[in-house]
Image 1 (cartoon, one colour):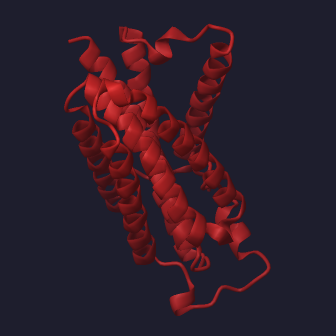
Image 2 (cartoon, rainbow, N blue to C red; image 1 turned 45 degrees about the vertical axis):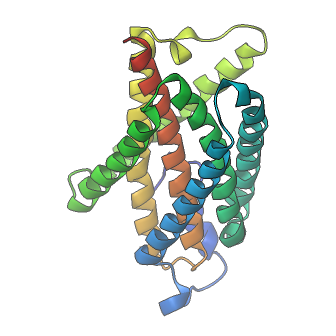
Length: 251
């Protein structure tokens, strides 16, 4: 089984349980435990976002936002990489990631809100509404994480990441792929497709978490799985911000 989320792949739970027999009861991963830890991490994201948001007071405070954005983005990336390679550290690194990523999201959201009033609450509502709808669809069996489905989402996610990396590299030479950030019809369509792919990654995450519970993964994998879900939700939120801003710029 695979997930398009780089934090959850087919070896995630196999690696966690390798070389040891997982104990039963309170020492094994559970769905409820993962849900509780996901909620806790989301609260930490909110706290970090509230801090950086509070530092914004209009265009004059833009210089103060740059260190928060860069520090949050770089710190979040470093902590995400550490968590991905050292899963047993997740009980410590996952909360730190949530706080740091929240700082980045809050600073970026404040800037978007200044340019497009009301966009942040729309993006937040759509993010959690999408998660709830997809979780319901997954639990009801309406959407199934078949092997073909997984392969398609993983391939699409990989393609998007390569496009973003290529666009970033081109930016160093003063060029870019206009449709990625552009407000044209093609740009809006591209962002809409990325939002759909990001959302469908939640299905793969749900499937991988359920597989971990069924396999009796260790308790610390609740933290790791919660971290992985937050990674996907952050990606979805950022892509929704991008899409909504493109739509509003055409009004």
